[in-house]
Structure formats: structure tokens, C-alpha cells
Image (cartoon, rainbow over all chains, first blue to last red; front, side, top):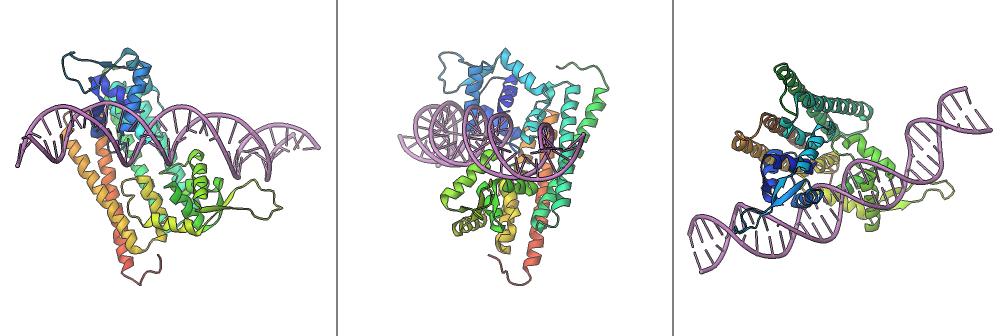
Length: 179
Length: 179
DNA sequence: GGTTAGATATATCGGCTCGATATATCGGGG
DNA sequence: CCCCGATATATCGAGCCGATATATCTAACC
């Protein structure tokens, strides 16, 4: 998933590690704080796999930065990862996908959103079941915590519903030009 | 943190690994799904540290279960971990603390809640700042994602506020008998 | 009586992530 | 000129996740 995020950012422009971390923090920071201990190994991994390549601008420039560019193979990997409509159960994964939704066509977008919705619906049902089952055994604090989680999840569903509705309204227009 | 959760559950009664996992899933499952790959090593660690001990009921009973009991040292560790008022920034950590709030006295409870509130307030400010700073650069989906995160965090603050208010209202009563 | 399925129960592996830490350079203000 | 904060890369240990393997117990079914 970090791989997907890195590739997605590099699709726009070449970047170096520090820049990638800042960029990730700027948009996804609230859901997922990337550490150097995972970022640098991930970049290395991508390089070894041939998904990104290190570029050396102007040989005469003093260079402390490792600037990377996405390769054709990297583009492919990114597209595949994005289309693959899992990522429903992992909040961070779903967030990353949304952040790169512009690279998906409307149908695929709706598919991802519907999966997310299904996952959240299941979760709501499960929490309700737990509340019913364990109501007697759990203390007031735990109850409040679970109830709050239930509220949040319900609101998440409403939010996803709005996204789906808008997607469908927009999709009723001209034919898609994206992937 | 898993250590705290395990100790907290063992405070109530002796349990074996499978049971601990089920119990954790029942209440905290929505925030944090514990895996065996972390649970069993954690139990082992606690045993080595002397925080829990394995008990062998009736020698003649066929026993496939490794039943554990919390020790005096384990009780100490748990209490210390619970009082230590960090755990503001980690959702799962905060959830675990709440689930064992009954073992804290009202003052300590309010302290933990206030810290959580401060963290969430910072987070809201940060998200607002990011939205203002990057509004032009990010696409509609990312914007919606961040905005939704902002809403959720704001609601979390309101929820924590209600807990604090209730805690103070209740605390105005008789002297605390808990730790 | 046999067998089959699902719940109970423990354990481990590889890969990934986190948090902390080390190191060094750059740019600007005092 | 020196120092500080931002920039930049890198690595380590510890812990966690998901998957997987293995075995047994229980209850249902014919």
C-alpha cells in the first residue's frame, strides 16, 4: 500500500524520499503517518523491482537528494493495484485509493465505493450484534466506546453513499476518457 | 499495549490464549483486530517477565489449554500503564484505556480524557491548516476525504467532551474508592 | 458406528511497519 | 561567524499482521 502511494505520487512528478514523506503527510497524514523506517525500504524495494528508477540530474550539481522517477512497469503496477477492488476493510488502504481516485474510471470508482459500503454495513451489523450480545457484561465506558464506534461507522456509510450518488450522477454524462 | 489489554482481562479471571482473543474481539474488535502472531508472543513475554503465570488445574484433567493468571507484578504493571496518561494519539491505545477505565479513579480518568481532547483539537487545527494550504493543489476526492476526517475528528471531540462532563458531574459526588 | 464439519486451541514464519536514533548538509538570522 | 532549524538519507530493534500448519474436541447426520 505504501508502494501504491509512492507510485501514485511519482506519477505526477519526480520526487525524493523526504519530499514523498511530506507530500503523504500533507494529504493522508490524518489517517496514516508514514515513517522513514518504512518509506526508504519501500523505495528501495520499488527500485529493485524496477518500478522506479533513480535519476541523476546535471552531473555538476551538488546532489544530496535521491530523486526517483516512475517507470513503465511502475505505472502498470500502480494501475493494477488501483483497479483491484479490495481495500475495503483497511481504512488506510481505502484512503490511499481515494487519494488517487482520479486515475480510475467512474465504474471502477463506484465498484470500490460499493465494496467499502458493504464492508461498513457488515461492520455496523457486527457492532450492533456485539452490543446486543454483551450489553449485560460490559461496563458503561466500553459500551460508550462501542456505541461511538457504531455512530462513526454509520456516518461513514452515509458519506460513502453521498460519494456514490454523486459518482453516478456525474457518470450519467459523457463517456469516460480515463482508464 | 497488547500487554495492557491482556493484563486487564486477566485481572477479572484466568484465561487462555484463544479466550483472550475472543474477548478482545468482542469489545475492541472494531478498533483493533488482534492476531495470534502478536497475542501468543505477548503472553510468552508477559510470562517471562513474571507478569502472568501459567496454571495447571487438576492434574488428571486432559489439558490442551494454557491457562494464565495475573501475578502481583502483573497487577502493578497494569496499574502503572493505565495511570500513565499518554495514549492520546493512538486510537487503539486510547480505546484500550477506555475499556479499562473502571480501574482508574475519576481524576485520572479526566486527565486521560483531557489529553485525548487536546490531541484531537490539535489534529483538527492541523487538518484545517492543510485544507487551507493545499486547497488549490488537491483534487476533489482528496478534499472530500480530508473534510470527512475533519468532521469525524470534530465529532470525536464532542463525544470526549460529553464523557468529561459526565465524569465531572459524577465526581462531584462521594469520595472515590478506586485506585 | 463412522465420518464429516466447524469450533476450539496453540504455534510459528516472513515481511512489513513503527519509533527512535544517527549523521550530515544547507540556508538564514543574529 | 556561528548556531539553529529545516532538509535529507539511513538503519536498528522490537513488535505486529496475515497466513498457515497442526491437532483435538463436539455435535450433527445418516
